[in-house]
Image (tube, rainbow, N blue to C red; front, side, top):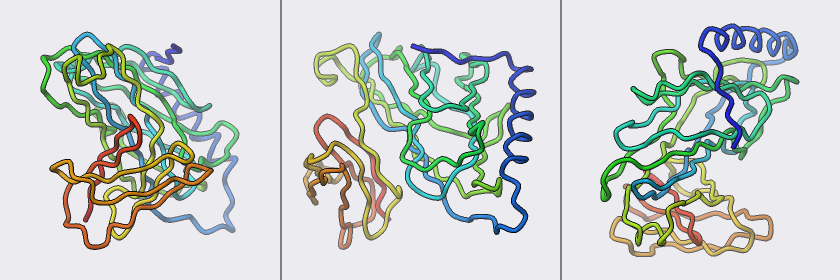
Length: 254
């Protein structure tokens, strides 16, 4: 897997340089800054102690994004960072602090082209190190070295909504008798949702929405392009799970 770690001091110089170049390319005084909310999703997964789980940091469909930065955060007592694989040009990762569980991240397109989701920016590989039957989170946060910030295509601030990854440290049976689990392609937005949720996944796949007791409360079929929609009207507010095949995403209904 490709690793893209950089020394901390060079990371900051590179950050400043990239932002200046992007601003000069995108500077268009006659245009009004775009406004809106950018949705970022880190997926979900199951991993056994000593096994591996792969989490994609995905920018969902929404306003055009010209830049994104923050720190990927995890609990080092539960997960160990193994590697990363960039999924998009212009991604820079800083030096991982494996003691506190933080990894600085910066994305901006060197050609000045805005990002239109859903797009996986980076896939992060973790190893499970804690005992089973525990749940831990992986999030994109405002960290000690890198502020959490999203910019639109003319470098105006965007509202940022991050859905952290929920990782279950399970038994071998729960992880489908495999020491390696990879998050399947299932993207949802908005999250939290009200009224309806949009889905992008495997073309033609069946989707089920489950409540906290595991009961199926809604179903849908994705079209030939993998797009779908689940109506949420009439459902009580709370946490739900969207499932298609082996892929699962947590959904908050308001």
